[in-house]
Image 1 (cartoon, helix red, strand yellow):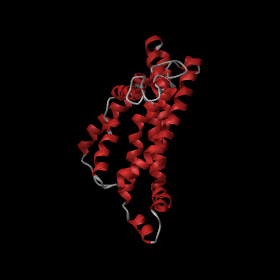
Image 2: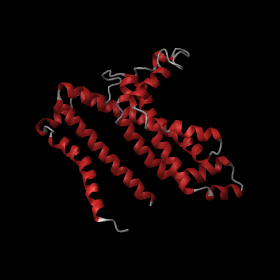
Image 3: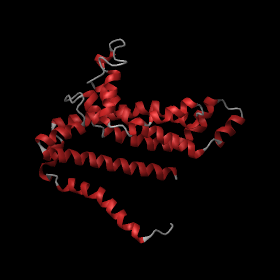
Image 4: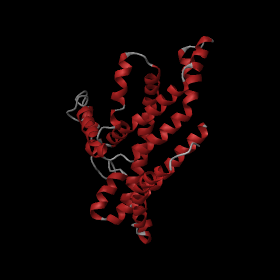
Length: 257
């Protein structure tokens, strides 16, 4: 490890404290005697189950769409691919509520696609809308993971396989995808985490209907107005889940090394 100037430790410590102190504050505010009852209430369990179901569905959707998209962005050389990259990554910097409005005007009852066959009346403010909102904001994480891994690996192995007579499909299936599998696994974990924590786009596009679209982040937001202790307890649940996910990401990276 290269030497680091001692003065760097001061802002580094402040940065770490800036992240750690709020997390500790959440833990200190938990009503431990009531914790079990708060996180196992019918509304809390319903919201948690819905969050897990929709996040898994959104992650699966991102996997189906994101891996091919990442491959195209990494290996494509056309101007269209160059123009597509910033558009695909736009949800990373777009305010979630703007993403929700965009989805509403795309798939809503009077949206761009919603008017086709009346599908808008069957998507907005439903569980499907939750999945679409989560996938919209989480997709770039998987795309970046796949694209970054492919750019780092280069094309030497793929060109060698092609020289030996392998078709593009065989190269993709037997060379490219196995090489980026650890990156895909890491991207899937991050995608699931982002989907699980989604709030703004979900609220705007899907609403907050108990049992249908009210995910755990929405339940926490509502509980904070009526029962702050319940909000803190549920926040701790998400905090623990996030910690497990981060540990999983580092585990995948260790596997890659």
